[in-house]
Amino acid sequence: MPKIGKYELRSRVLVAPMSGLTDLPFRRVVNLFNPGLIVSEMVAGQMLAMGKADTLARAAGGGEIDPLVIQLVGCEKNWMSKAAKLSQKAGAALIDINMGCPARKVTSGMSGSALMKNIDNALELIVATINSVDIPVTLKMRLGWDIDNLNAPSLAVKAQKAGIKMIVVHGRTRCQFYDGKADWSAVKETVEAVDIPVFVNGDINNANDAIEALDKSSAAGVMVGRALIGSPWKLQEIISAVDRSTIPKQLNIKDKKNPYNTYVIKSLPPTPIAVSSKSSIEASILSEPGEYLFFVANKKGSHYFSKTYNEHLEAVKLYQLK
Ligand SMILES: Cc1cc2nc3c(=O)[nH]c(=O)nc-3n(C[C@H](O)[C@H](O)[C@H](O)COP(=O)(O)O)c2cc1C
Image 1 (cartoon, protein in one colour):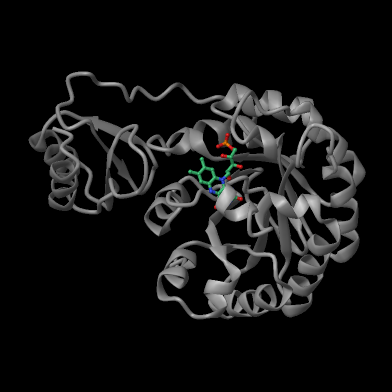
Image 2 (image 1 turned 90 degrees about the vertical axis):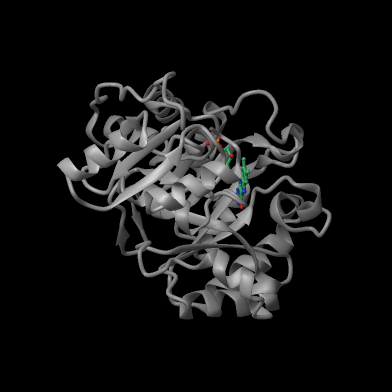
């Protein structure tokens, strides 16, 4: 398995940071499938350093996410340095720096993917972050700012020299935002430019995509994001394919008659069960006691993950999903 510094990953499949989605309940659910890493939502370094409570909550792992990876976004080295120290104190095992976010509100402040336009500043941030902590620091980036500036390989070489221990490359430029298709082959140049593990990201929706992305990029592993929204169990299939070269039988989770559009995941083994009524949920829980999590299938966010059936019904009511 790939190593990040001295830390050996338990899987070559990573879960992508997604602002507004990869909060603690979501990360708790995907954690059931044992991915290599689950990255927190991006956390603004300055807000974290200023002690904003909601920022701290966004980064938290609740003692359950191990290793805890906190992703920082920012463009000012002193704030990044303070935020990195705080993240380590809060239990982070790894810190990831965001150089991939394309959102205008982030790039207009010269953070996220805008740092790929200003390599000197990017390197200052990297060095300040690494020097502030004694845990590994990783980097998430795109292919470059636009098609005329595909500088991921050269940034990767400089970042490795500065002490970055792992890199994820989303196979799009910033100017593409989420248009078109991620170019997995284009990630190969970065893979070949450095010795540290490079992971390929973008548009990996199932096991076959994961294998094709690895083939085309020669990456150390894959990072998966949007495919897991509302269907976190897809991770199981992707992990099997990537780590064990087997594709498990497709889980039958489509049940059109299901009035609540509800699915249940039992902690161990992580098998989703489609349920069609309160009584069938109760029956399955009674036949196999344990901890369960309730979902509304194919809906965004973690608001739909509840720990008890009553909590779940409240969520269903709230979002008028009956
Ligand atoms: C709603 C949403 C929020 C995101 N937030 C972040 C973020 O906080 N940090 C980051 O580095 N990337 C963020 N991304 C980008 C993803 O991590 C990932 O690179 C991208 O979605 C491509 O991978 P995918 O096709 O597997 O989703 C976000 C993407 C989405 C859709």
